[in-house]
Each structure stands twice: as C-alpha cells, then as structure tokens.
Amino acid sequence: MNALKRLADLLSRYIGVVIIVFGIVAFFVPSGFAWAVDQTSLLLGIAMFGMGLTIRAEDFKVLLKRPKDLFIGCAAQYTIMPLAAYALAKIFQLSPDLAIGVILVGCCPGGTASNVITYIAGGDVPLSVGMTIVSTLLAPILTPALVYVLGGAWVEVSFAAMMMSVVKVVLVPVVLGIVIHEIFGKYVEKARDFLPLVSVTAIVLLISGIIATNREKILACGLLVAVVVILHNLLGLALGYSLAKLFHMEPEKATAVAVEVGMQNSGLAISLATANFAANPLATLPGAIFSVWHNISGSIFAGMRKRMMKGK
Image 1 (cartoon, rainbow, N blue to C red):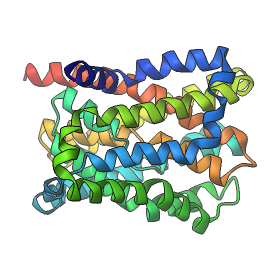
Image 2 (image 1 turned 90 degrees about the vertical axis):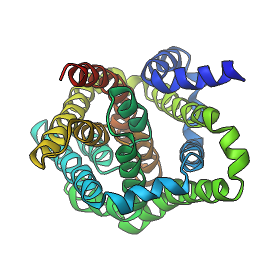
Image 3 (image 1 turned 180 degrees about the vertical axis):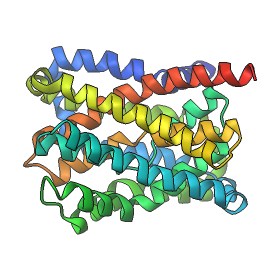
C-alpha cells in the first residue's frame, strides 16, 4: 500500500517526464495508443472525476474566506491566457487549425497539476485549490464564450455545442466526484493518496493517443507549435505573477496565482478540439504539446520559487 502511495506521488510530481516517455513510445509505436483518441471524452471525464473525488467540503471554505484573492486569480486566468493566445496566433500568423487549438488552450480553466506544482514551490496551496475549483466551475460558460469571441476570427464556433461538451466532460464528472466524496467520504479518504493515479493515467493515455495519430503533422509543424506553446506558458507564469504582485499579494499567494494562470487544463482543450473542430485536425496539437511543456516549466518554476522564498 505504501509502495502504491509512493508511486502516485512520484507520477504526480514528474508527470511531465512520464508524458514525454509515453509520448516518445507512442510516436514510434502508434498502434499501441491510437485507440485512445476515440476515447478522448471518456478519458478526460475519468481525469475530472478523479479530481472531483479529491475535493472536500472544507475546500470550499476558501471561497468564503478569501474572495478577493480568488477573484484576482480567476480574473487573471480568464484574461491573460486567452488574450495571450489570441495575440500569439496573430503574431505568428497561425493557420486556422493551429490558431483555434492555441486559443482553446488559453480559454480553458487551470489544470489539476497546478495544485501539485504550487505545493512543490512552497506556494499557497489552499488558494491554488480554490482557483482550480472556481475556474473549473466557471468553465462551462466562460470557456465557450471566450473561444466564440476570440476563435471566431479563424473558424466557425458553436457556443451551445461547446458549452455542452464542457458540461459533459468537466462539470458532470467533477460534481459527481464531489457528491460521491460527500456520501462515501470515509472510503474515499482511504483511497485519497492513490486518486492522482487515476487522473495521471487518463491524461497520459489521452496525450499519447494524440501523438500517435498526429506523427506526420508533428514533424511538419511541431517546432512552430512548440515555440508558440512555450511562449504562451511563459507569458502566463510571468504575467500571472506580475499581476499578483501589482495587487500586493504575499510571495506564497503570488506563486499560486502564477502557477494557476500558467498551467492550463490542456486535456480539456484536446477534448474540445476533438469534439467540436473535427474539420480542423491540427487543433488538438497545441493542447498535446502544452500538456508536456507546462509540467516541465512548472517544475522548473517551482524549484526557482522555492529557493527564492527560502532565501528571503
């Protein structure tokens, strides 16, 4: 049992490395992972259900105790990353497929890995958890609305269809997980340490499937997408931190905001691209590359912040 817990902790901390390893295998042995693309919504739903199971009623207390911090963080989440995505798509003159993929990443809520990275960085974990919960619950409205406004410059966007996609693969699984936790809390708590394995496994399979089915496209335009994705992520981290400092947040809070803004739920971006932009096959690529990169950059940022806060 302890060995399984250590494995779960290890995979959560080094999910970027795990994704890279499986991604390389999927690239050279696509037949072993291509099937996952057809199960995109299911895999993301499993990941979000796993997230819901880790949320306790007391986690919502932060919403009442710290509304100002949460408002600043979530406002940053849904302004910095969407606008940065739009600007980068224009600057690099991306094709409609890639542009909508980058914008989808920018308009998604914070990813669950951000809570782990915030913890490693010595940041304010309750604030990070609160931001993830709020941005996820707002996603069914804000994500489709932002994609509709910003992505409409490149492709036709159906607000209603996208909203239903977010409700099905994010809101329903998360709420179901929360409800089950409340009803069977005693049993869920016993398995709490192992729940990250559920989400990690689902996300790794999802990204590996995207890589397996897009090998030629990755070779053709992977470098351009990687540059845009890296800039997008770094802008999120830098501007998120700068905005938090502008509002005179303590270093721990500023670290949480930076990580939460910079690390997106890129699995949701992949799922939305698959479900709503089938005519734009490259739209899944930015989300897949972002999933790899933001875990790497987040881990590096966490190490830097922890050293800086220890030395203050």
